[in-house]
Length: 150
Image 1: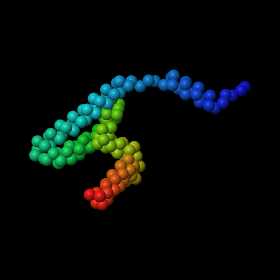
Image 2: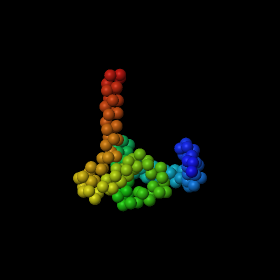
Image 3: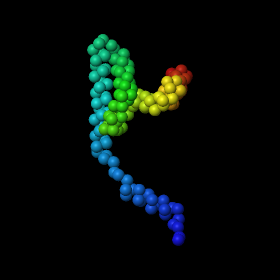
Image 4: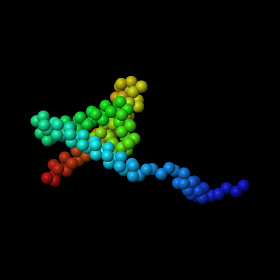
């Protein structure tokens, strides 16, 4: 029995995979992301208006609204509700603040069986660590640039 060259096998395999791979419902995915992402933005705006109504300045209300969105995303992730929202909203749930809170809590929850310090505490920063390092280094570099070139 004669075997085919590896390149031909790869091309045939790719053709078979392309034929049997299910087609994603593109329109539904885009609509779901738009609606869920928009709802998260509306909720954020409601909190911003609420905190401004309590007498906070725009900057203070923005910080309080952001903290509230982070808390809600973490709480919903812990309760398993955020994942159900993500099934409908897909990329719309990766709105920066809520998506980051979800990814941090999810990674911490995955290792909660290992204990609070070595499990949750250590894994909580597997996602946050690179983001914090990037933010600190970028802030430092911009500060140096501003100091010398202003």
